[in-house]
Image (cartoon, rainbow, N blue to C red; front, top):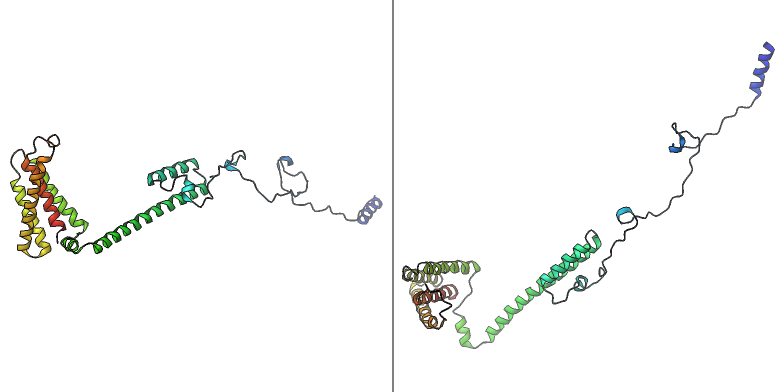
Length: 263
């Protein structure tokens, strides 16, 4: 018995030590079973250098391309004429934005073309106004001396002054129309004449000159109204409007122009 045990120990010690090879890293998958230990080594899968992504992620949808996206002419890009109005340009832009909604490059091209056309239109209007002022100034300089002397009596005030005086005389005219059936516009005429003289004196700084000018404007408006009113067809005039009221309205217009634009 002891001899058998000694023989087994000698045989075990004489057998070379063998270690199993270290397995490669393995990631458990569904095919590995419940424990995920199939013992199969990890193999490298071929990797493609490009990734194809389609619109919507399904690969069967084709992204629409704006056909005139690369055009340098903004009018041609929007499909409008060079003499198209701003409303036509805006309609073309809105139509194209709806058609190519969601596609950034197309939307940027459409918006850029629209902005260029609007800026060109604004610049053209600005230069046209400047040219018009220059032409008027040049015509005044080239006009006869008597025309220059006549224009020297007039001035163009600020828009605020024009608006205030227009509102005032418009109120006087509306008041006269509202009370025309009850009484004549005598009080309104007197109030407008005093106001006209006050406005003129504020510019002329001379009460005598302002009073003379204001009275002359009032008389001129009344005379012109008396001549024009009979020539107006009767079917245009409301039946409650008298000749005196129509003449007064003409005088209001003259006094507004006189106290606003006369120096």
